[in-house]
Length: 189
Image 1 (cartoon, rainbow, N blue to C red):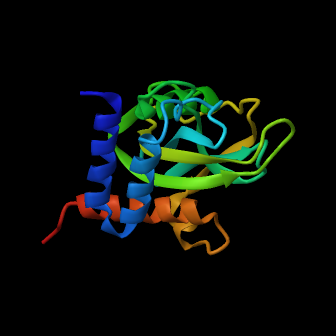
Image 2 (cartoon, one colour):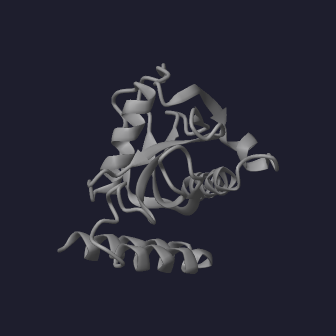
């Protein structure tokens, strides 16, 4: 199966799980089929990125970066740089940006977000088609701040979901995570 077919199928699967995001899923499929260079940052109009919703072992906190270039608290992630396996990109970026080892990535797409990156220096304004995956810390939660971050912090997911000042996509992911863990919680009689 070709990469574009398998990723398009993953986007379709995402749409079935999140019918309220059908437009976003269709937008990602259209972009995937738009040009051969969509996994390269040199693709001037935009490119795919992979991000990690990096949750603590207890599932109650998420590791966020105070992003050096953008100046906001965001999830860890970065450019695909030609890698078409976006779950692998998300895992690699989580490891590189946090210094954590023993991380595990879920196979299914957790969230999709298309956002405009402002022009900076020699880089023109462009779009990031960000494909986000759940990455789980297994035992080690002692992070190391990389050069890409001003800071890192474990933030309570419930607080992000309730914070009306939080980034809209962080709020959406926090709510998705809480829905996911509530659905998987055992029912007590």
